[in-house]
Image (tube, rainbow, N blue to C red; front, top):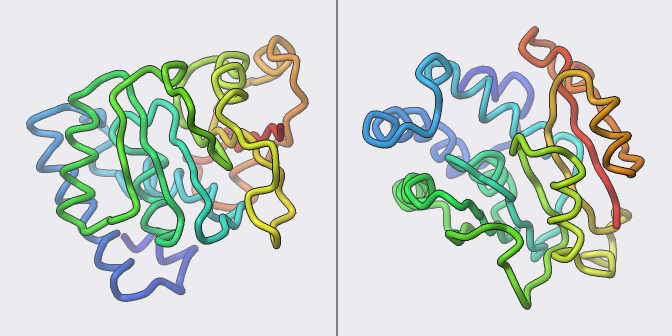
Length: 210
């Protein structure tokens, strides 16, 4: 938890309590349903929570905005972002139901009220639009963008926002070929410009606007 407070300091008591609960809750659930690798669970706050919050360090979601987390897995980046932005609605989607069971249990136990879940493939979501798609899924960028485009609103999600709707995804490694194949021109941010820890070397945040 200290590593979160190193970079973010203006949490309410409720937000602090919710972030503190994540470690015991995920450790408990990970014994039953493995959603985080055994070697990473002890570094939950650095490798999962802080990694997810790189989006919060870069984007300011307006109250009332609706965000879908594509391939949320155990709830990343959606769960930390939902704590950070309590006035924003987060819809967490995954094709593996048991992972969403963990997300739902963690959200309920921590009192995170602004999360909904859906057990489906992202391309099966119909008749619903979102202001942003966020993802830490390992799918190629071309697929993430193909799945995201139909879900995005056509207008800016709030009058006082300068960000058009788009895909925000967390990626690592050499992305040149992946970006070329996606036929997109994403805005790319190096996470080492936000967080000093060695873990964030060669990790990036990509934004593709609609």
